[in-house]
Length: 421
Image (cartoon, rainbow, N blue to C red):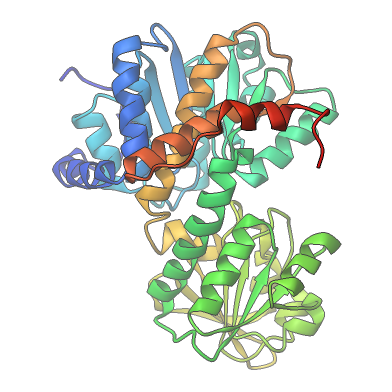
């Protein structure tokens, strides 16, 4: 294979990475079927795609699908701690895809890699947190006119992009893949629910049964974490600012209260809001000795880390991914994964079978954007419902499940206003 531009940890890890990628591919039949079709139809022939995503086995299979469709692909990390170095090596050495990502890279390297992805002069961008889109809009504005569209996969990123649309500064169309039902109903709820709990347990090895587990946020990610924590035997408290979501949590059987009320009760805290300073200085001062603090949101701003460090008189690391802060009041608080995504730093992220649907939505949305080139306005769009339905159909087929089809009479009835009781 010809030399591929890259900045990764170690090419010698490629063999291990390829085994991991192939293992994940077995659990991703929908994306595999799309990759086969892309290889035949070449929807991205002659196009450049830059992706800023978590460099995992599942992402690797999305990159394979895009390249199979004719794209020239560059991948950089969307989080300094989530890169799987063996996967990065395999993408470069065995699949011929340029990767700029090193697990544990410092902030300067992280942003330098994003700039390299922008310098690829993409026709399509794929983001997990809108960092690449942010770089293009701030320091690479000359690229805006050549970008057909961007795709965004996270709640946090979509919030940022909708704000840009409202302010009139969005420079190209965005498809909010995060809003696809095949994404948030499954990836956010079941994927985040399982993988966040997995990360907390791998980092700490604590028993959740009988503990008090506080979940901040009751969107699809938060409710997934809450459901899984309850399933492990924890008593779950939910924090919310949205009255409808708070009421949903109550009706789902969870205790709902303010952060001020909950902080002295919780044994484990997990933020999943997409907002900033959810857990703050006044909360840390009231937490139990030994409380565990984790974050399942995209950015580490959900926990006020500067305030936590300012309140501490000492810090130690009793386990990998655990920083123990001793506060002035003598209590110790345990911060997991440096406040970054617990499921990707201390664990392996979502299971491949659920990412199959999310990355199928990415792949089909990319194809849709290319087909609609020049017709979309500079605003944030949802994933077309027909793509969601196609992803669900392919997933059911892969599971060997058949469903009923409406008869012509039923279709007429559902479209008619003349038939009543």
